[in-house]
Length: 230
Image 1 (cartoon, rainbow, N blue to C red):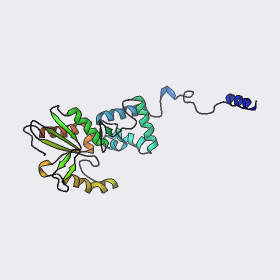
Image 2 (cartoon, rainbow, N blue to C red):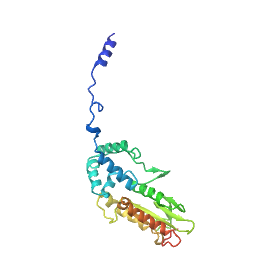
Image 3 (cartoon, one colour):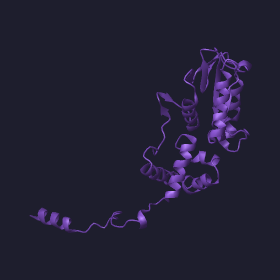
Image 4 (cartoon, rainbow, N blue to C red):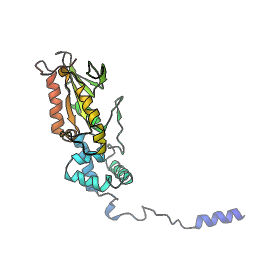
């Protein structure tokens, strides 16, 4: 009997928790302005991946403003913003996975180049992901990011995505300073006959630049190409 009275009292007690349906924001607005969400979707379409906060630095002033508003304050704001983007654009995941098509990519920059390669590469050419580079100076065999090859010409061309540096190769952050020598060593290991096409992080964020670099790789494996790689 006492239990029934207590249950009845509990059911009659008002719920004081905030109900977003009871108190909607004016005009159906959310915590994040729709113009910011639309801008993020536009930038992601431009790069080919769901851009992370560190990528926004290479995408212009408006992108930099997004970075300051949602990425710099801390992880919580960025996670909430990405989730809001996903709600408006379901094809843009709240977290971009680096595992795609059976491959584990090292960074969003590498993933973006991979997607651009798939849409740019002629069907007559072959694309290898993380192929072995033979005859390296510092090691007998190492792995590149990509290799484009042609069975018709017998030529191939390696592609390296330098996702930590822009084209100036200037080390601004402590991470860049710590990794600069390692990155240079990776690039210098290639034999002179197999020098790769380089795609830096700022190029990844510029569709014209990255496509131009990929076209150079495609031209290199054509019958009259200028580069070869074993």
